[in-house]
Image 1 (tube, rainbow, N blue to C red):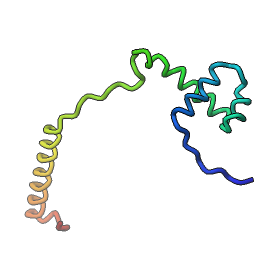
Image 2: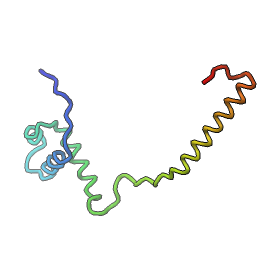
Image 3: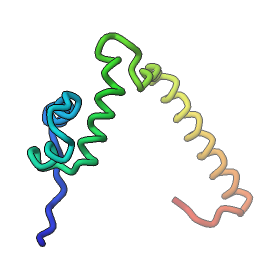
Length: 102
């Protein structure tokens, strides 16, 4: 028995298999044999399709959009922290508590 390498399926293929499972014309076992995919994987894709179907028609999506990041605030914080680190390194070296130099 040869071990098969891990496969990555395209989203279109997943949708096709999940839609076939939802139609119910064939059993999950028959679909698994037809598409050469494990039956549990088909069940998972079917569940994901049913959960996400409402979002297609303008409903709220599962993931909430993240708030935009203000880069100026982040750069200011980085500058402040760098200044504090330099100050503390200087103060500790003057006090003789910092033995490791950069």
